Amino acid sequence: MALVAISYSKPKMTYVFRFIVAGLFWSILTSFFQIVILKVANYPDQLYNRHLLILLIIGFLIAYNAVLFLIFSYVNMMSMHRREQRREFYMMYTVLALMYTVGSIFEIASGRIYIVEVGGIDVTHFIRYYSFAGMVCAVICFYASVTNRKDISRIVWRTVCIIVPLEIVLLGTQILFLSSHVVYTGLSYSLVFVFAYLLFHAETYNELSGCQGMNALDQYIGKMCGKKKFHVLYVFFMFPTSESFVAEGANMVQKGIQACRNVEAISSNIRMFQVAEDRYVDVIINSSDKEARNYVNQIRGVFDWLKADVNIPFNYVMIFGEAYKELDDHIKIRQFYDYIANRFNDQNSSYSYTTTREDLEEFQEYYEISKVLKDIRNAVDENDERILVYAQPIYSVEKDSFRGAEALMRLKIGDRIITPDRFIPIAEQTGCIHILSCIMVNKVCQAIDHLAEFYDFDSISVNISSKELSNPNMYQDFLDIIERYDIDVTKIRMEITETAMFENYDMANRNMEILDKEGIHLYLDDFGTGYSSLERVINCPVKTIKFDKTLLYKSLDDNRMDDILTYMIEVFKKNGFVTLVEGVEDESQKQFSVEKGFEYLQGYHYAKPEPIEELKNYFIRKSKF
Image (tube, rainbow, N blue to C red):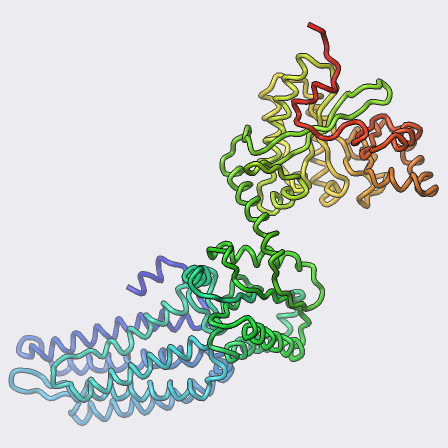
């Protein structure tokens, strides 16, 4: 059954996994020999043949020796320290195997291995012989584990303390009470491999670190939520390139395992879990705040020792806090610490942080927003009412009227309206940004279709996320939506930020060229906040340069910036670009912008963002009828 489970699952194929597979195979073979021998012993008149029985016994003893070797190797090789000494251990087992073989030959040659009697064949001496050999192997395994206690994980040690004595008792009982005619020695080896597989290879424990995985963490925390007070220590490591690990070799692994042993030694109240290659979670149970903080300080001491003792420079971030009752399930708890950890992704030194109530409140908003966004993504409804479209009119200096507008996204959660600065980063992190953009394009097309019938205007623009611009197929869904509406394609435009455009210039330029060929007028938004050169901007297929308000404000107070702004406007207009400035909030800024030659102005001086339906109050009506 264990072999079938291995065949149809994805076990952790660690260094010692091969001993499990081989052990299960040899266990089957050993049991087969055992069953046939007992069958012959019970029905000698029908089945007994001296040479055949001797061959069966020899086959069993060879298979049983293989089983003992695999158990011996598995138990000892779960320690990295013992792996380094495997040559000495294999030599020791070779000596034991030689003694076992010589003893087997002597027993067979002396004729005492079995006795033919009236009514049956007595194989009790044979069973006692190999059972005693099994006990010797178990005692040696237990002794090796005791002498290596500091180098093996807590879970391995506990397993050895349960399984090995149980095996000794099982074999000892078989030797002493064999007269009951019940043979159960198969339990002494087959279950060893089954339990080892379930514990260390069926995604439960890592035999070296003693850590469990993500699923185990979720189940463990889930059982304690709302029932026990516990603290969580979230740790992630920042290592240099993988080449450094190759150079350091097994020493780094050995030191890391020793660090796990040192953490375990601090308190039995600490449970360790590994949730990613470089991320660990320690759950501290049944401890006061002060005691838990003391444990965390000791753990930090272990990591500082590790930093000082290895040749690879690395940093770590520790995030510690109580499992707040508001985090009422394992998913929220895990996501809370992931959320806090993201703040420190660019940390260039080791750091320890304790969570606060303010962190919890911030996370709760993040969790609520991300939950709604994922629901919107999964619903795939381009008319989703939770996405609201606001718009801010854009003023044309030449025509002295509002000729366009910028569509702005809002998220509605219950009675609250959430602004883009709070939910767009979350949408980008959670992979929800594309459906939001599609909803915006769809709703803006609907608004254009309605407004164009009664009002005179040039266009309404939609902002495109930086994540979208790096997607090779970002344009396809947008064009499909636009084609569904009978509108002039030039009336919907797209704004692309300068910074986003140059994160992946080649892909961004390709997407922009495709949109431009389809008749989509492109704006370069937030110009002046990135680091692009004028030459690169001029070579991009954008038609309108939208100056960021910071350039406007700095130019009002700084003559040097004023000169630079004047020069940039002249260069862009000379090369056929339309210039627009945002953030115009008062009359002086308006006059300054007009004098500089900006063709379009946008800002609170003219209008604040309002629901897109209110654009009818700014655009000129085509007819009084």
